[in-house]
Image (cartoon, rainbow, N blue to C red; front, side):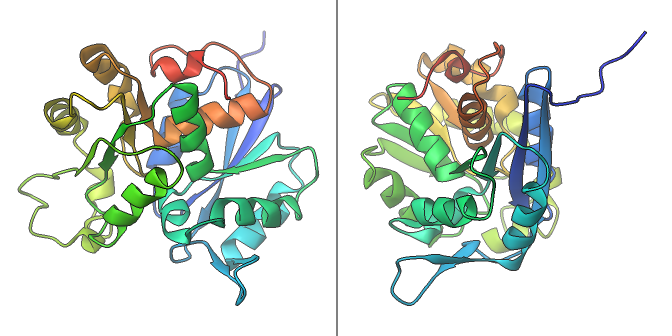
Length: 265
């Protein structure tokens, strides 16, 4: 008798994630359908993970990205994603497409390449969301918040409002940049996040987008959708869904929001 071994015979997906984070893999494995495997390459570079050349026509990949791409090239993957909301947001106009081109040139042609920014856009379109309520993690600094707002507005998704998660009194006195190094990433309170989103979501928002792949939240996506009556999209949910569709996998995924019943447009 054989037992399940998590072998990705339907699809293997490679994801670049922040070196010190555990959330992306945990959430992806929770949501992934049978026979799809997840393979992570860790990145310790500063944001964004690829820097523009002088004329801003191409990007140079961080060393960790180059090394991971060379390894992924040998793994017979179906898709690869830059699982980092901040890089897409901070990279500026054209960054997502430029980094996809650069990575695609290093990988076999059968491997689809995407970024978390592109995945979130695809998820918003598929969910008919044009005025999302943006939810940012507590560790997104003051300078990143307006860039996040502008990133989606400039791509046709005018935010109905936004909030940065209040991490509570045990963390509130720390500046955003210190929260993850001090351990908040491993002590995230999803019940408090649920209450804050439900209380602050504007009536004119036609959906919710929770940015940040290190932001633990997929466990409350379905509950928020049920209560708010609107689509709720998270960074990791969007990237897994988009990678599955790019890989041609349409196995049903239940309990993590209506996105998994939709198709890209």
